[in-house]
Image 1 (cartoon, one colour):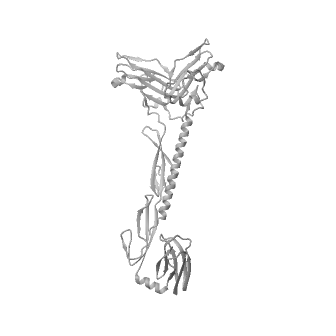
Image 2 (cartoon, rainbow, N blue to C red; image 1 turned 45 degrees about the vertical axis):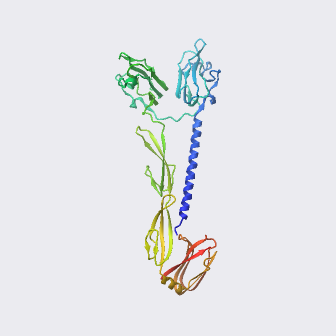
Image 3 (spheres, rainbow, N blue to C red; image 1 turned 180 degrees about the vertical axis):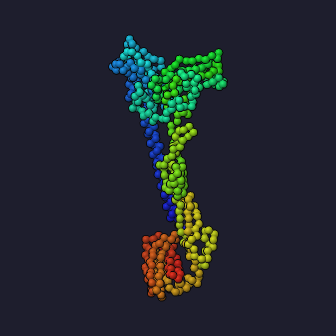
Length: 470
């Protein structure tokens, strides 16, 4: 009989591993849900905003007259919007002028992504406020004059690039405008007639500042150069309007020392900036051991190891290991036969054998190696051994107690054992230089019902008898 106990153990072990994996997966999802929820905020939920009028109910105060000279500085708000209400949401500037009168700017439609307004510096004390038309605007980052809001946790800073290090920029022909971002050329045909837009989120500027200007060709083929525009920290964007003729449009930059963490041209993100780190899970199920990409050989399940790869544009890609190691199993098939026995390997054995093995597949889809423990007795040997030692085992079958009796007429070493059908030892008694009558009460009250084997061996041979516990 082949043992199933090892398979049962491995089945429950696998079930436990799967349950743990499911638990951690649910925990991971809940954790990430909470993190996302904590990162974002609605305008209506953020106490940085005060109440305004019915049309402009949410107000972000940048400065007041009480701030004195500080109110004269440029005032800037920046908000990274992640969700907008179904109806339009606008923002506008409120400020006081030099003579103390009020000025209301034109409404500006909020869009998904970075939104920013800078009110230029003046030479008088004043009030500046940013008024919002809807509180259902959701954002993940908000700053006022460079100070981050506590209402939302901004995402961690991503990788940076300098203009001079980014291959999206080509060399200009003048020292004054050495870096060129080409939006379209005449060879693009009809596509060149569409609006052309660049957007760059600047994180650092050189000490002497930096400018950008537009170069384009006009309908008669002449060159047009726009006025220089000073680059600022935060979002910078220029859109060149659509036309009805093929043309070239380029954005020229005065310095390569401008550092940025986001750049797009006509809606296409630059590869100079890595996207947020990509996390992938390598789910592997193996038997006994596995050597992963990190060179380590794992002999137990592992869901904590990780390995950092570099993609084609030099950005990190984190590979997390989710390894399930299942164990191979083994067992002993104990058999007793008279004259011969044909085993599961198809071989017919005429002699005792305890070395033959056969490989099956267990419940974990791993190897289950079965070792044969075969005792072959001839009819004459069994009869001779029984007569020589007068072996008696009774009652058989029994509910608990077995009485064993035999006689040894000469001093010899004898081993008496009771084993179950997978070879586990239930009872053992080693007799040294034993001679005379042997009597033993074998109590199997605590054992499971089934077939067991009584094994008596001497230097001259042995015998095995089946006993049945009911």
